Image 1: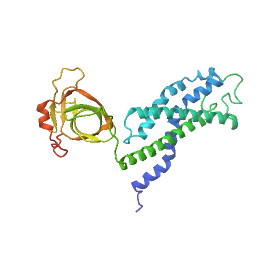
Image 2: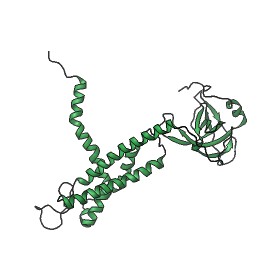
Image 3: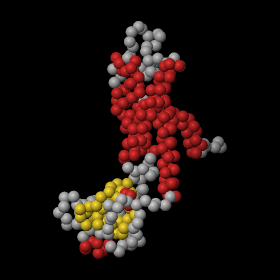
Image 4: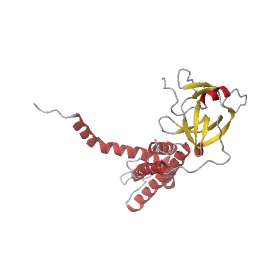
Length: 289
């Protein structure tokens, strides 16, 4: 009997056949969008009337920062930079790099490799409609896509090195002197998500203030009445800037003093504080879904 092809062998064959196509799509599609600012500038400098025939390039100009943001977000997922400000700066840098690479590639192509943005020799006299296949060199989108790909891998390597350095270097910095949290106070600061992918500014009750970090209990506004590891929380404060009523998570977390943001207008009420003041990391009840 003839042997059947194994699933792994078929998968490898499909990967070999489709791999180059997938890579070319991953480079050309984002590259075309990221090259749009350079393409529009290049064509406006050559013949402003022709770009009017293809307004889709203007849509690419609008989408270029969004594509750059998606690239840097994929590159930085699960890494040391969770705040959006870092990704916005990186997206701006990537947008400028891709546009510059595309513009440089098109100028060099026109000057040294015989590229043209006018009509082909067989076309009739006079201005002709602009098309990517016949008039505009492909070097611009390819250069932009390659730049984005290299930028992606550079960010992955950079963030990996920063994460290793943060794990291997002891944390010796402290927060400014004006930030002096005390037990039973409510503060706001950056608390990581459960899966470790990012963080968010959240309120919490300070259990213990240690030299370089705090042990805290997070306050959430979500309904956790069905959970054994949460306690109804209220402050009774009439201050409009005080934290809203919600639930107190009975899981001790650590917050670096460098991630502190501000002190809340309210304090943890005495009845709740008497229940949680002596909690340790091992005291939290089991989570009930």
